[in-house]
Length: 317
Image (cartoon, rainbow, N blue to C red; front, side, top):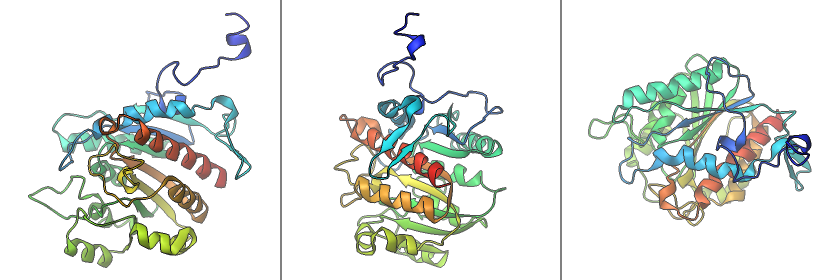
């Protein structure tokens, strides 16, 4: 290779090479994870009640993330005066996708849970790319032998349905299933608005089971600091982000868009604050369905939020 190749270090532009998340190393051996953060794809969308397509979310987010593949130099944020994601300071691997068995929710969820458990066993923080929001159920299941967590949800919908037509493990059920866990100490459900997935009795049950529910408008009245003040300080947080928590003007690529959602900086500032407020120990980002957004804005938003979040979790630790 000439001096323009390996000798000088490869340029490795975003459109070159394979699409691991952020172009971080791919580790297919789940018994050999050695990282601070491990990315797991959960391309499962059998839990949807309307528009499917989130099975392509992990692939879309990975491709979009190559735009932010910073290489060894990391990403300098002049507002924070911090360089995040420097290769010599942070270890990130992509372990690929959990195996999904078509039409088999139980086995597919079990395979997702196995992936999250492998990441936790390695001492890394799981970052799970959905998939519909039902993938949160196996993610939370995987924390059964961990210290307790407080669940923080960014979403348009409450997702607190107990059972509907016999279905208990669809994308309208995950927060109810989480609240039932003895190791989930409470829920902060943020962004919930207008036509929701849960009837009034579900809201009443959620509050009885330890939920604090705030809409986008209520969040904006509180401000970031006011919202953080409602979340128990110094706890271990599991963070679940439904992309439809954002406004469809910037996140059209989702199965159940709901107008009146968050904008990018609102959530970035909140997540930065949350990463200083306590310890974020697990993350999933769900409901990205790329085919509904030909502009690619939704997958770019998902990748950008996750990379900024990972950088801030690591920096504040």
